[in-house]
Image (cartoon, rainbow, N blue to C red; front, side, top):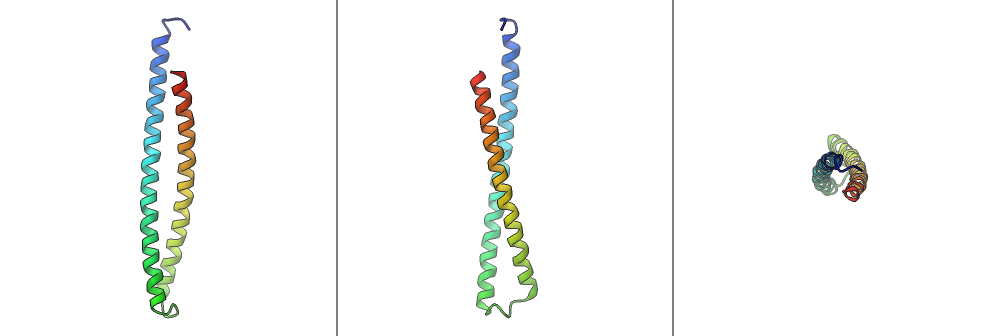
Length: 103
């Protein structure tokens, strides 16, 4: 590579590195948020489960059962989102390693 092209290439690599860093930070923030929501839902689920168990289970109001079902579904979706976020983070980390190797 001619010496005159080197500063431009370094700027391109630095810009790509900045974009990847930003994307990784965004994925990590999303992952943290989803994890917190999942933890909150799991706590609420446990509270509701104990409330149902304390009432004998059969006397639980229908809306409580419906709420548990909704929470279980949202928890499933959050877990799927966490898996996707982990995969995206791994791909971004791999791309970042390639950029670092180029520098």
